[in-house]
Length: 312
Image (cartoon, rainbow, N blue to C red; front, side, top):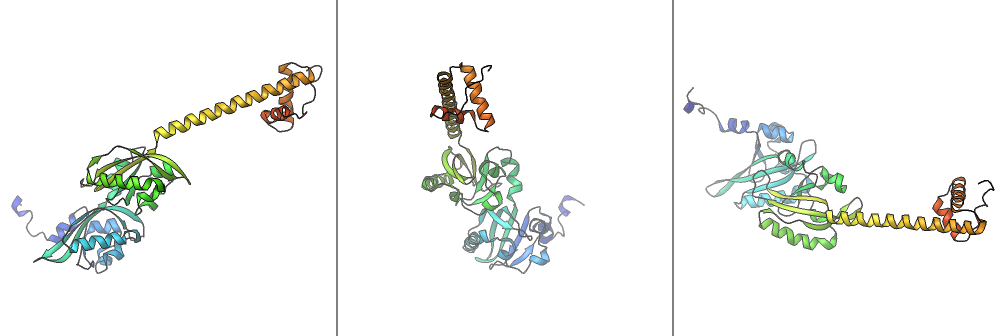
């Protein structure tokens, strides 16, 4: 067959069925009228099960109901929509989808809505999961549509429960207003933005994190804002320095108490420093106490330790 004849006799339905992405068509009210093979694989519903049902009953989880309503309203007004959106499979599980919806019009009147969707997690996971940072993909309104597994390791978050919630909810109340202003700037300026420090809820506490935002709303593979989060390097360095200082201070105090206790025994029993320390350590072991505690009690005036034996 020549090249011109290859497409002869191929119906539109056959062409849509061959597309690797899920293609779903609804009437203006959202009732499904077409569901291709890729939609069956992606959502788990057969075409026979899906056609005739409302799209919200089949693919839209509770966390996406308000956004779905806004999308439908925009499409009826003639405005196409594209972006990340949490969707639901037949088994009830959810996943982030990259969805592009457009209205089908006849003489200026909407007669249907066609949507193309793919698993956004599968598309961007190879890019985001290689990073040691926690990665969130946000819509323009700061709602999370994807969270990388590193969010649990670094901050104790469950990646599935984050989808459909606002990133603002993860922040300390005092940092929310500043971040809201930053996000307003991020969504209006494509590309990478300078990182900022924010306090985030992590492991039942608040921790400082460095957040870097990249506006990829115009990228057809992403259609969102990537937020990379990691424990703040500056704050981590300060905390380590403070921890080391506390450890050094504790070690010095312990050494001072030991030397003072040895001095007490030297003066009290007329023994040498080494003999005094052996007596303190022996008492601590026999009474299941730390040497520091025994020394502190001796310094405080308690007469705990017996005079060393003459052959000690």
